[in-house]
Picture 1 (spheres, helix red, strand yellow):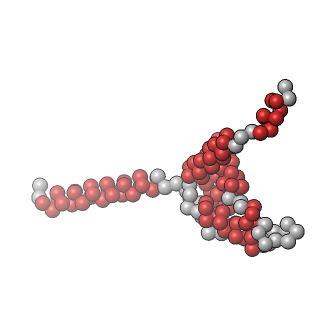
Picture 2 (cartoon, helix red, strand yellow):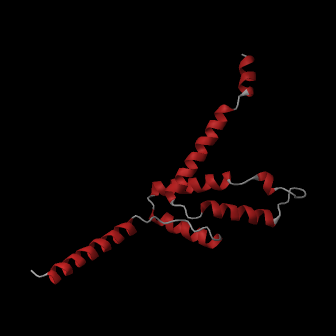
Length: 140
């Protein structure tokens, strides 16, 4: 065997290994939410939902709701309003804030974040003393 033939085989093997590596790396790419604007966020969420099992879709939808409602700062929303009327700028600000909080996240990241928010809220609820229960028990 000559040197040129061996070099050619080695280059071909390296090329196959590189292509295989790129293909495998591409398989691991999970879809992410594009939080650029309302249209891109809706489109990317639908694309992600299309790839999920029914169980995961339910978890993903629930997680999005938890994150969305957790992200609403009602004091900020009604700040500088008259008679409880919300200004468009306040809603626009909150939407932008939500889009940024979801941007570039995968379904797994969204679900994990919602689980953390629920656990935090549950622990806060347990830490609050229940004065109503004390009053009810004292009347027995």
